[in-house]
Image (cartoon, rainbow, N blue to C red; front, side, top):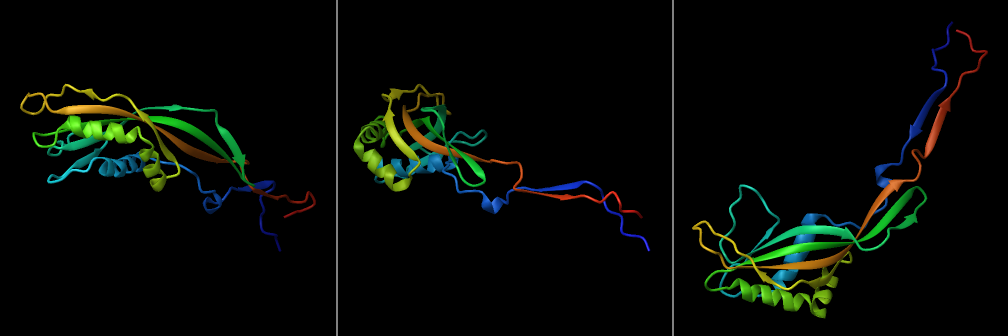
Amino acid sequence: MKNEKQINGQVVAYGTEDDDFPELETIDQEELYNLIAKFIRKAIPIKGEKLSIVNGLSNRVSPPQTPYILIQSSREGTLSYSQTRYTNQHKIIHQVCEVIVSIEFYGNPTIKSHKMAKAFEIRFNDSWASEQFAQYSNILFPLYSDDMKNMPYLDDDQQYADCYIVDAHFEYHTEVGMCQDSAKMIAMQVNSVDNKE
């Protein structure tokens, strides 16, 4: 009677289960835009007209009817050195970043872009903005905005549109994680030299 054939020196590595990975502080662009849009709706109350807020630029999509506001992330950078913390099996890197978001205000004869941009700029640069964002998130914090500026923009009729732009600066905190080891357990199967078929 022959023994079942075994593979000599077989090594099996078991990696960390996905369920074991810790919850990370992070924010994606869609969440960023939604938090800013929530603030804008409070900072710029519009009566009698619908105010559309467009998140990001999309090709082949026509802009909505004015008045509307377009939010677009334009630059991102690091504000401080990364900080590292450890769990039993993971290394977590925490980074404090700055993101600059361009907010474009498009007005119409009833709701002027200058008025919307000014209302945003004043409220964003006040401590009221920090109070509002504290209710929405513990990751995103308003810093300050640059001065509003008129943006020459030709509409579909080749006429200059009513448009102002404000660059808003935010601090946000983000984390990435990685396994400390390539595996948490290694199983080795070794056959004795004396084993014969």
